[in-house]
Length: 339
Ligand SMILES: [Ca+2]
Image (cartoon, rainbow, N blue to C red; front, top):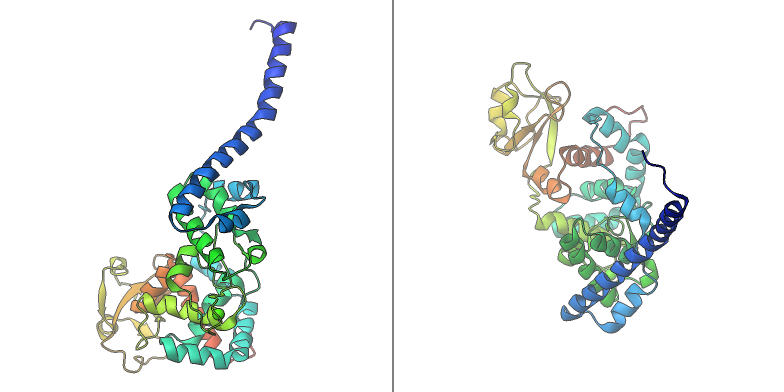
């Protein structure tokens, strides 16, 4: 290979230095140009100049958000047993029971109004933010603007950002308190801004749909989400069952729904030995999260409602199981995962 001459080496170094210095400022410029286009769009959708001014003051792209977005999703499957033990720790069960007791009056009121069991609302609250403790410290406008500008899912995040600006403009949260996860999930039930628009409730009537700090609004908003996505108060979410070893695993499919009694005739067994009261004709399907070697569940249409919150069988099963634990009395013994 030809040796680089002293002169071209110098030129090369200068070019390298130029690129190193200039790339970040080129990126910043493109953020500015994306932002000015976006502001025009936002104004055409009714966002005022003063809202835009206060929303984007000192907002620049957040490198940590870009890094987190670029991370490959976890491909290694951890298995349901491990997932369940991580998410439904003894501490989360204990805290769930404590928080249920603490907010009992409010929760029963919400349960009555929306027809969604109090323990399911508490369970979602616990899994999403450890009962309001971990709501995410990212500046929401900065996160959404970064993700929209970055462009991998621009349309999606621009829609979320527009909804976020409507929240600010409506005065539901103060600019400095407008925080959430790096990906834009907000408040104690981690709604995305568009979900907030569709489902959030001002339950205490103070004019703010406050899912950050008003308990009544938080519980009602979660309950409303589930109700609007089809929660049926005539059924529980489902039951853990055991299945005969010769059962065809192809039956564990979202397409195979049968009356509960039919599954029993096929050998599906409830741990209590009894058919749940009044549920013999309820349409249920079989969920076998780890392909037949582990646990099995019969689930009702309410399971699909939980999936509308987060499309993961592991998530939905854990929400259901934790809700059962929260509603049951503590035994004072070590964790047994069969409620
Ligand atoms: Ca309110």
